[in-house]
Length: 231
Ligand SMILES: [Fe+2]
Image 1 (cartoon, helix red, strand yellow):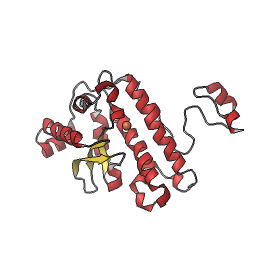
Image 2: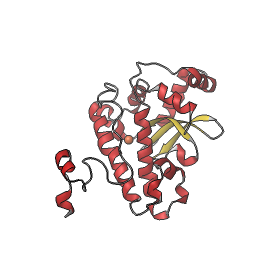
Image 3: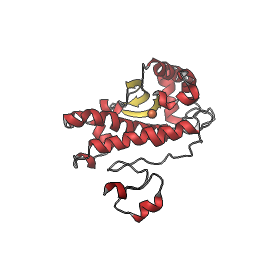
Image 4: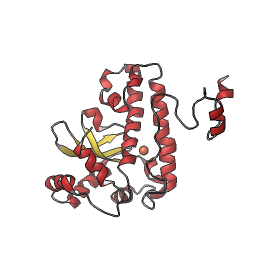
């Protein structure tokens, strides 16, 4: 009687009383949706709480649920990390490759996105990260201009990235849909979600305003940590 056992969303008492049922709001399967590392309103006014709640609690959650579904009858694959899965798409059974590409990519991309956000008060990076950006783009503003240009060039849904390859070369790139630099053997250091679900409630069609706001909420320490240990 699966229907009788399934707890209502948010009904933790019932979930606790029925251990065989999945925990409320937790996607069934090996992959889990981690809570946001800050309150939903932490990035106001640059990203509004409602957008964060829907983006994390519905969009990201759906990627996790759909990834779990894709590997539900592949126990060996389900032992791998989402990053391992998307970095080796060609090795996956053809029947689930597209689903893992889209939903595994969505899970990995969003997990990274939350981790590199924080109100930064308009600050800029420092240390080796800043040195790298200045060396490559002349100034921090030069980097900002190039990243903004790349973000505006994405047609439809996708992402803009600062990534690093196996030789240690960094660069700005864009990907369509939920594709990730991991799929091309590179490690993303910084990523910007350019799907309309990331900004439409507050910014509607004004993607430029959203990209400008993004620079007020980058957690540069998190990006620097990724540069120090790209994985
Ligand atoms: Fe998104």
